[in-house]
Amino acid sequence: MGLDDFKVNQETKVIDATKKVRVGFIGCGWIAGSHITALLKQPDVEIVAGCDLIPGKAEAKFAELEVPTGAKFFTDYKEMLSDDEIDAVYVASPHLCHAEQTVLALDFGKHVLCEKMIAADLDGFLAQKAACIRSGKVLLEAMRPDFDGSFDLIREALPQKDMFFPTERL
Image (cartoon, rainbow, N blue to C red):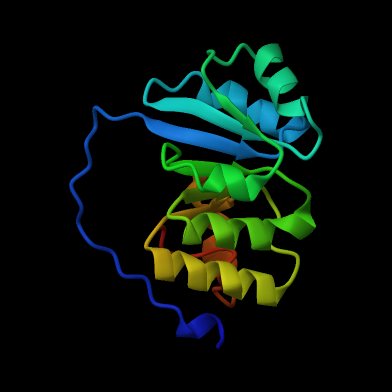
């Protein structure tokens, strides 16, 4: 299976705009803090869970950033992913964990925003893409230039269009 084997099926779906997206964080270190801060400003997002291998780290990060009370805390991301109250997860763990955690999150039916780099190798990336297609959920890498208009000139100048600088935005 290669990169050309993936086709994206996009269906029109009705979305309930009154419902908040409930987000959990896998990894509650420095980078998670910047994303938590940004999400706290979004009226349609609710941060409902945090997970870190170090006991108390997620609780401390949420308290530091004044995340509204009521969040659940975990030291096992698999346990967090089994929580049906979580719609989406942000994977902010060490790079080598990204592929495994992302695939499992997608298989649990969660949308995923994964910190860069999305996978440590091609096999991990292909597993993530397959899980994304299999689940029908959204997988997006953080800090992608796809939505940055300043990269349009770079995209146009590339002799070979590739997956890292797509000419058509999703």
